[in-house]
Image (cartoon, rainbow, N blue to C red; front, side, top):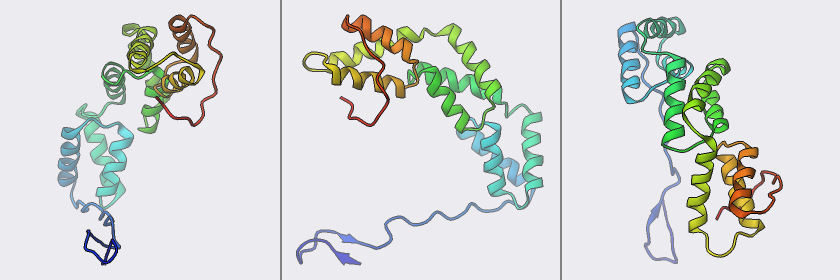
Length: 193
């Protein structure tokens, strides 16, 4: 351990800033693994892929993990279609994210594309993407000081692209807000306002 500062004791700094995580304890029976799976599902919903990875890390052999995974599916505790619908609803209503962002996040969680598309199609009937973009633009425009110049419009455009909205919808709503033509702006690194 060494001290920071010019000979004064400010705070101690050790070499090991973060301790490495130890692997989870291996479960030796199906019932222990099933209980661990139920506890994980009580904390939050999981896709089938996420649960498979979770169980394989904790099982002594992969066959035991697959047996428990099949049991969870038979008891209807795991269902990718239900998971995708709930995920899409939560992300659209609470986080105000667009279709492309929700689809990308579901793909990273291992949900098949056909299930993602059906969940997003169901959600599209209930939500108006243009209204969501308009609400985000109005909220962000209120916090901006000064006129909307090209740099600020580009920042708004990129933030909406990251949120998962289509570029056509963004340009249409930006054009309505600024009453000027908005060119397609390439997504690149820039500071948000």
